[in-house]
Amino acid sequence: MSIKLDFFKVEVVPHDRSWRDAFETESKQIALALTENAIAIHHIGSTAIPQIQAKPIIDMLVEVKDIMKVDAQSSGVEALGYEAMGEFGIPGRRFFRKSNELGIRTHHIHTFEVNSAQIYRHLAFRDYLISHPEDGQQYSELKRKLANTYHDNIQGYMDGKDGFIKEIDRKAAKWRSPD
Image 1 (cartoon, rainbow, N blue to C red):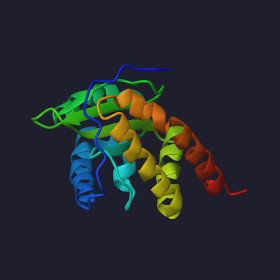
Image 2: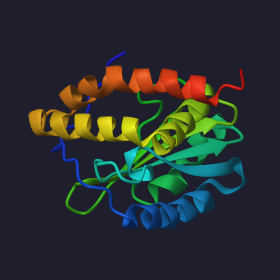
Image 3: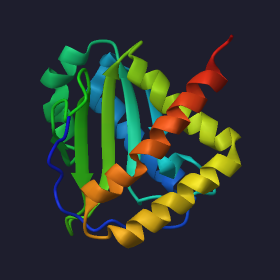
Image 4: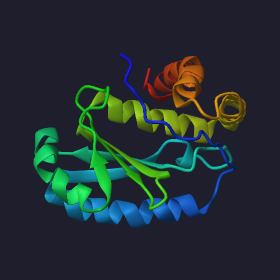
């Protein structure tokens, strides 16, 4: 399923240690907005993986008790500067995005109900790349090349990563499996 993505410049930069602090600060505000519905908030995506390059957008995964309740709570998240995007191409997700005063994207929130397979997939992907720095460096290099090629085409950039991400998802699931 393809969704239309807004235009923005594709920029991949070296890892910045301040991303962790930005996550911590923002996650506290999100927890307050989602109240007792929020179970856990995880830093995901490339900004959560030390030593690899990333688009400077903080991705957060929020586990909630009731995904339908998020719809009723979205005004609290919007009050933090986020735009509610609904499922945005992934069934069972509630997606929010935030930009700064210049219109530059700064944060994404991926919200899933507890026990969603998507939670497992995102966390396994992150943890696998942290534990396998050689694959992390391959991903970093791919992203750098794609950003140079598709600097004004986020869909081309995303499509270029798709095969690699699926391969890492497969490796991460096997790595995480108790078998």
